[in-house]
Image (cartoon, rainbow, N blue to C red):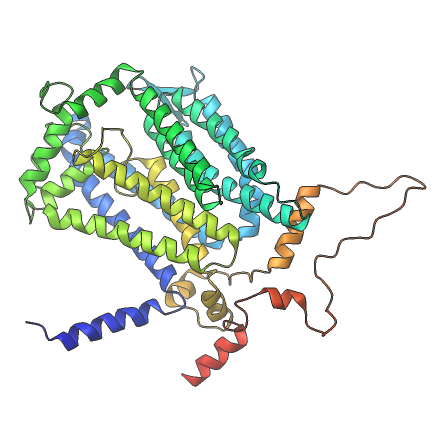
Length: 479
């Protein structure tokens, strides 16, 4: 038996590691890497039989997934380097382009139809799924919109109440959901609903109104689930699991058999029997069942543990950020990715109806993998903007990863300047006064010193006395 003192020392070392300035950044990078590598290995194992039967090569789907993983790695690196000020400026134009792509994919001849759904745009060498792109752009633009409205309202002493919170965010979200339903694609519609609800919740929507919107969304999702033939079959299969074992319940039952066959330790990597055409979509929607069969309960626990650690890291970054945009963006992205993972695992183990949502970073799917890695890169970039991380990086305490990637130093957040910039964006370009019209005094982004000679900008930065660059340098010399 291991001595209790040894266990306490290990816990203490882990707590000391978490107290480091860049611990959140390293957590996000490690989780993204482990989930991506695990996904590539399991896609190779689950798709080898089907790939060989279709094209004579067991590696065709794996090679395609590997290419998208490389694209996602590039996007991850770009997300680490992009300034959040620039990201906010591009949020609405990119969101508008993604909505335009949702319209184009519905046009015959532009969008490709697969299994009765028109969801992809074929560009020759590769294809893109606009519904995956719009999830990322909606998260970024929604967070930018709510924070800008709040800052502009405070600067003008007119917060605007619920109107600034709901309009135009909710109409834009409903428009996107409608375009995705027309594909049809209920699973991605549910993911967009999670994003919208997370934005409203973390944006400060009153609880009563949030519950009313949540109930309305649940009723709308249930109505959509019962409207189409294949979706109503899935609902009927969920509530009657013993009916039609060779028809509508076949896929769900085979997934349960795979999980039971794996046991505690699993049958071994590559030794799945369900992938031999017994479990449809084993490399995509039901890859968690193959993980359970080949790696056993321990493999499933590893996946759940990584997502639980991601929840901790994401909410930790949101809680420690001083920029309200980063708080809202990180919390919403964490909720969306985790919610999608829980829905996928839930319907594989039989707790939820089958929806078709993929397991983030693990299931096969090029657009989903690349864009999810981009969002992980944004979250990792937000981790580098934590106050302690900013102070440490500006003091020259760069970690090995930052030095290897040559990442730029994060910008210091100035609340007064951010509010002034938001007020300027809300007012729009200044109008030139006519002849004889009195001229207004120009607005000053940086306030003057008060009567005591203290800069009010410094007074508003609550974290600066504890986590200034000078303090970090002194602390480094003391070590």
